[in-house]
Image (cartoon, rainbow, N blue to C red; front, side, top):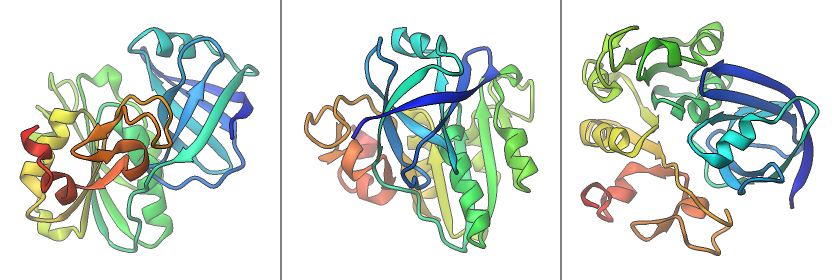
Length: 243
């Protein structure tokens, strides 16, 4: 059911990314998403970037709807449906987490939950340039070791996050979790999937969020119901890497 909720905090993460915090009574698991409508633009899917008592979504300005969302202020109303979808596997194990761009919004709650559940994690975060970095201090304050890659070398490793992953000895990890642009996810899977149990979160546009419109189908799966978190081998066995 839709929930009309008041925005209690707006955080400008960088020049194109904002986080909106709001009260939301339902329990949310790491990796799940909600459908968000501001009453003006289109309803769009957004990963939860905070899953505690005060929830959050983190929005990158990429088009008309996200530009409208960026105009929302503290005290204004959002319409939230959810939570929807699958979650990251969270166990007291050793994790390698890999985020590209706003993929860090989906993976940050997972990293925090891994620690709460007695696991350990190493985080790799990739951005185009240093001025786009966000959430990294949040993770480091939680005690998580974060390695950074930037396309232009303005912070950390110079190059794509998929290239930095190759420098890690994956045999030290039980799981790899990844979220980010599709080319990055496919490169990550080609590197890791035969070495470590890998789960990825796929971003997709959708209309309903509950498996009715079928606009988010990938390799015979619906991202809204079967994902957004998938075991990578399940997708690959259905031709995902050659699509």
